Length: 144
Image 1 (cartoon, rainbow, N blue to C red):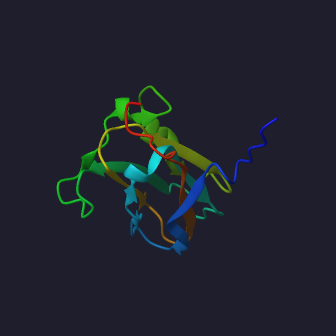
Image 2: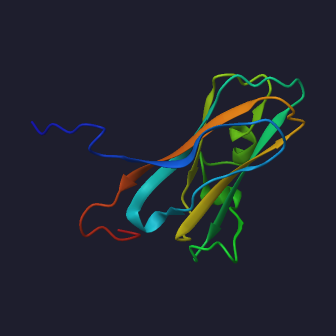
């Protein structure tokens, strides 16, 4: 029997270090290079969200250039889980204390970047974001 462990099958990349924003400054994540992965998703973790009425909206952008100079919002059909409204489902309201939400990417662009934008946040919005990727196997190419 072959024994495989999960830790040897994934790579976790810091996108936004744990940070508590006390205003409406967006959390702009690190750019992820999908050429290294056969699949993956973002995990967004909240702490205690203090402001009634505050919201944090997810935007996932894609580009073929690392500088994201010609970026565009990822189309619903290139987000996971399949369907529509995935970014809304991955977004947060003040009621989402201590919650982890995920959103995946299956598009064809090389790079993505996730931004979490708060509104009505005046005192506490602690978040951390990581990308959990499945590294490509030796010799694996897109479409194989």
